[in-house]
Length: 510
Image 1 (cartoon, rainbow, N blue to C red):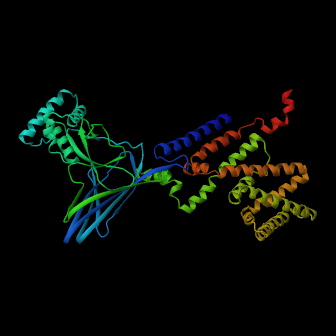
Image 2 (cartoon, rainbow, N blue to C red; image 1 turned 135 degrees about the horizontal axis):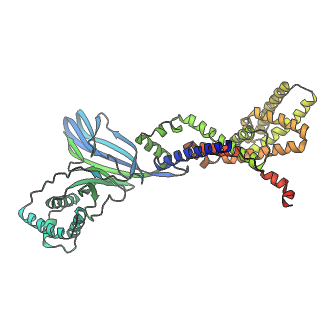
Image 3 (cartoon, rainbow, N blue to C red; image 1 turned 180 degrees about the vertical axis):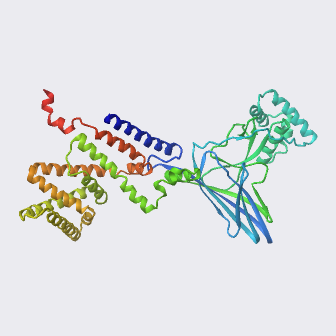
């Protein structure tokens, strides 16, 4: 029953750990690898206008509300002495700058950082009832041409989407009929084109509304919004390309504004204009995911290690690797069969190797243990009691560390200075235990366990110094539940160790 209890507990821990990790990866976008970068777009809108005399100014500028396909990493306003408020009417979001008295040339800035996020798809706007349609009053000639074109298109369409597609095919024909030629005469720019399509759709009793889209292009300067179109298909508002009729936004397009209102409206000033600049850069995906989680109001990130001060985070980046070293020792001792001096000594030595580097750390550790062991044998000759003997070994270890540091520094080997990073108490206990084992079991057993401890410390260093593993455990600390579950399962392992299989290989052959 105890074995079943351990297995069920381990299974529960694994499910919890893996589920939390899966949620962070799929919902919050946290990366599994430290080298993963996110593509971040910085969009800056420069608003410029003139004020001829001291006057009160109100500048209203529409900004993205919930851009589909992107995560808002950061957003900022540069308003100087202006007051700033933001409004959200459920369809559009606007920033309004206001000042009581100002004069001369005025410049305001709006900046937003966006990261591509395929999991955030553009959500079509729903409407419970069909919006009202306002049929425009066209001149008699244009009204007749529009009527004739719409009658022809209706015969070749089945719903609003197919109607728009067929209408655009006719309007873009290289050899247009007389009705299309007449309607296209008043088109001067892209805004006129979208307005023409909206008028034709209203005449055909199809609800539509204009939209403004910013197409992200790296290095863009003095850019502008691109007119777009949305139609009501009876249930949802659907974005359509006003030139091809294809649904959706253009590649890299950000839906900026919906409706007939001007994107920028300045009251009290003149010659108002807005220009867009766009740049692209790579940023650590972890930072992007962290900001995204905050925008979502995720409690997981609010109470995660990322909420700690940076200095404390750096400490936990090291401490969280200790369970990995402990699990490695469990495998090497219980499954492989390596003998070591205790459990924690190799882990702490591995932590010291992170600062000294592996080769120099092993050399310094070997020298210290050899010199300490030599002096320990002399102390045995003095027949000291246990506690004074341990204190003497500790004092000698510290003196040896100081001597090695000074001696190596004089020789120009700065690596010797890092010997001070070794845990002195662990070294003293290692020397004491190795000397006792030497006396009781012989030098072969003592050297065997000493060599095993050094090898385990070296392997622990290789695991604990892995940047990928450090990133994985720090960002997903719940994976330590999986490590705990595997440790519990190994705690019930009573089979042969690999070294025992080698030891009894002749009996197994027979």
